[in-house]
Image (cartoon, rainbow, N blue to C red):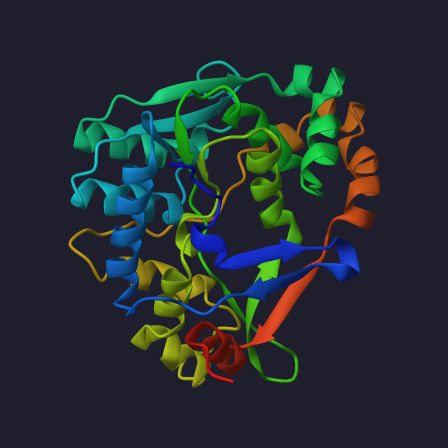
Amino acid sequence: MEIGVVHDDCLVFSGNGNEFTVDIKPVKNRVGSFYEEATTSAHILYEKSNNDLHLMFGGGNDGEYMVNVFREAEIPFKVAIISYGKDFKYNKHDTRYALNWCNKYNYDPVVIDIDLEDLIRSGKLYDNAEESKCCSYQMCSLMEGLIKVDGTLVMASEPQLIKTEEGTWCWEEMERINSYSNWFESRKIPGTSDFGSYTGEQVLAFLEEPIIKKLVNNEFSHRSSIPIKRTLYNQNSWTQDKRSKYTGWELFERTDLFTELNVLANMRYFTERYNGSFYLDYDETVKRLRGVA
């Protein structure tokens, strides 16, 4: 069976820059909790896969939630981790969480080495940016790693809410995040780049979680759903440590080589074209997913 980046075309992305938009399809099934819907998606991906499942885990909280969902569902999978430089030269500070998790649960990770200097000097970084319509050099380097994995790939990315300056809560989709989907489709990579939004039921379950409803009722001081994600993830049988979000490039960005290679200036072309955002009022998003006119 063919695996689409999203299941049953529940979300359809189109346009670039100011024209970037998302068409939302109503859900087809009864919606359970966010964890229940994540587990359902994990089983769908496993059943559709014709080869080994590889879960991309860089050490972030979203990735840890994903691997724990698959682990608790007793679905066989392999963990794949990107190494920037030999032995995680540039990204050991964030991947240590992934490596520690693998050690704890007895997974032998597949490590994919990426030479950042060669990727930039060869022009592949910018070729990836154009092919995927991506404005983030950090993401374009990870894309290079994805094509080195043999199997069905699953990446972690979760729905997100943001509070506007007017005080309205909106569901947010960023074009740069969707560029992973473009890469999957362009390179015909089986799997999904957006596990947390793989089904419309997952998105709706996230929006209707009690802690998310408290957020949009302004019972917290946060202006986005990011600070409470870990609390949502920890509502299950495991505990995820609090840590900062890293891209893996932080150390490389502080080197003279990064400045010499002029990455920021070279990426400006893509930033001007592929940096769109889509926002939809929280209540309207729920209505569309519910199929309410």
